[in-house]
Image (cartoon, rainbow, N blue to C red; front, side, top):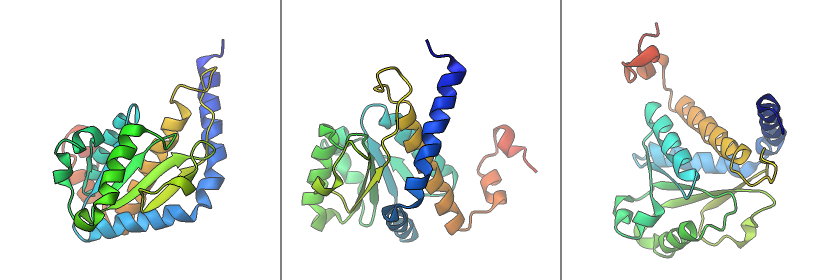
Length: 201
């Protein structure tokens, strides 16, 4: 049995090994530019995913909102039953899928793609290298294929390190965008009147 500390060290190591690849991925800059232009034009970022990625998307949309970046969670299942009505021109959908083959996700993305002359939105699909062949994707504006990281369970199946990689990736984009829009510390504190942040001087 592996100790808790050893498992934590493994996660940190796997995430660290992924950094070099991410730094050299040109599609990331293009994707962030798309998101920036959406926000600049008063549109919004919509995070979506299935399974554990639902919670990731809720967290990212909350982080974006706390940084004065217009973002929400978009449920792809509900999307096919009316929630597509929340889409506006120049919105950007950011979809997370480790395999890139999640049926419910691709079903909705295909519908959006096929009707994009009407909807006029951007689609960014974030997957993991070695699992998904981005050349086969027909439904996205741009693909980001992150490294396939080792999970820390004995079967490498439980979404652990891969979920943290998605999370860290989204957080980095949030901070980058907030800097580009010139968010200042005083405004961040102003919108966090409760808790320790609100007491920051």
